[in-house]
Figure 1 (cartoon, rainbow, N blue to C red):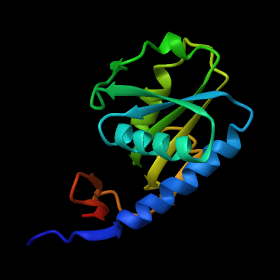
Figure 2 (cartoon, rainbow, N blue to C red; figure 1 turned 90 degrees about the vertical axis):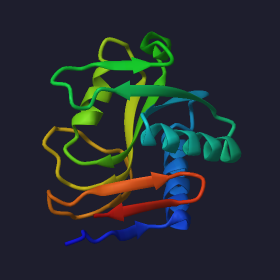
Figure 3 (cartoon, rainbow, N blue to C red; figure 1 turned 90 degrees about the horizontal axis):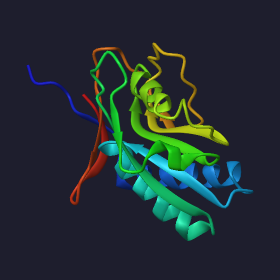
Figure 4 (cartoon, one colour; figure 1 turned 60 degrees about the horizontal axis):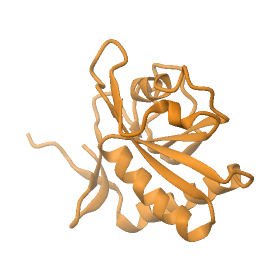
Length: 167
């Protein structure tokens, strides 16, 4: 039996969610000159890039992108960045991922910055599945989606298609 693929968000809805999140980020950081969007590879980084574009249009905020590549299946923190985390010292870091399931990936993402004194760290997810196993707080969410553990939420972003599916 083939599994059902249900579209939860389309291109326009994703765009609306990201616009709202960008305004929330701006409101939370209105006194800042610069923020760093740390996008978790691959899709969190793509979303961070989109948020950077929106923030550049709606504000004078200097937004830097940091690419965060985490070994998500590792039992310990293993991550690589394109900018050394020390360069984020005394800055606002906004950790961006596509879907929150257990919270493990975000915990690892926060762990990258544990030894760096930051002004503050915030978290963004497009979809929160509400199955957290780790004590993470999401500051900016596109949508909350109640699912069962065996269901999968997938963000597709490519040149032709942009959507969130529940399978």
